[in-house]
Length: 562
Image 1 (spheres, rainbow, N blue to C red):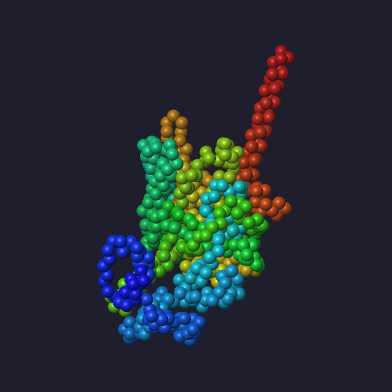
Image 2: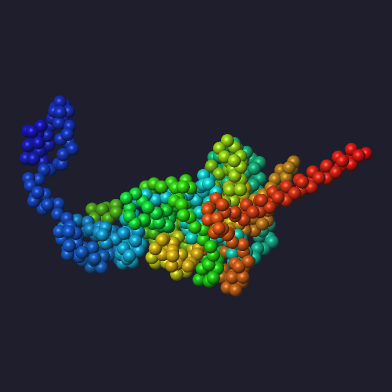
């Protein structure tokens, strides 16, 4: 072994041949570097890198280059800011990702986040906003069937959202022609008959999910084909199974070994079945900066999220509205271009021309089934939570998509939006549909900004409405027009569909809001609208049963007397 190492030091390029026994005895030699430098000075001379501490002036000069060009000439000047540039003198790549010292930057404190304002591109802002926070965070799924009770109230708190029962004035007032509605219902009848009569494999969850996906796919294809003349759809993008991600901070609490308490991080991930994106953003559902968007109770949550079964784990911080901000700008392209001496011809990244969302169609996961909510060995009857889970899904999906779009436009917690971002969401399990309109008025909901920020995000929503009924005996399909009309109203909404301000405010003030009972500030003690309606229906049925029994008793008494 000693002689072998001496040979490697003497001539690192010499090809050596060993017997099998020598290789077995010298297996550790393979893990040693190919070349052993005689001293530390020789190693530093051959692997010299600009260091922040030892070469502060040179390091700052490299990192603060305002002209993103290569030093070979003006013909190689870059027209867009690169992730890194090649220093010809030191023969090293210089990474332009900001690397602030820990003492100068901390994403958890507003007074130490000022460096994010100084960054030129979205990628550099995200490098500070997302990549510098490595603590555990809570993973928030859009559909959480294991949540104890009243999921929508908890999601209202996480996203600072005010929920209104109903749809905005701009959607409700959209005119629908009778012939257009008739054609759409004929198409729906055809695809439903095909699915219900011919595709009868519904024994397991996977087949139910596939059937729902096919029904939603048929509806989306028809709507897009029949409204190709729509001003926003002449140039748009239809995504299939995109991934929407959103990371944000909300509330404060104690983390292990942390003093004082730090903000809690939350990460959501949503995968719609279809997603429509356009060049222009939708018109505001409610007037910007009016009383309806600046007032209203937001639920409060004093408990840590893990009390409600929300997982806290290590997860990469991600923000994405279903597409990449600069497609193709990856480090591999720089290496290939340098090897081929084509840095001057390095193509710029691809910017998506449709950054604003219009409508997303979401299919419930395989595990969602109404029979699961009925009483069984696992739990009691919780059918009243179906509406809560669907409502929570609409709130979280709307927040994830709209907030990610706002961040891609350069907004973040300390640089709030100046115009609302509006999106539409359709949630379905194939037979029932719920329609939601989400208006993002603020992303500054972290604990440093929430106390002084009066804006509320708005979410309009409908119940989980049935699409069709099947007549007994004839198997004929009867469609519910209240549901079919909403598909056409959603797809007809556009960026130019601006409603009168007074009419919008009057309509919004007439909507019923989801109320927060501050006297009993616990999520499980809140009573949503559908629970009140279900209790009222049970009371009516109970009184009817009592009256029926009284009449029966009187009949029996009269019969006995006779």
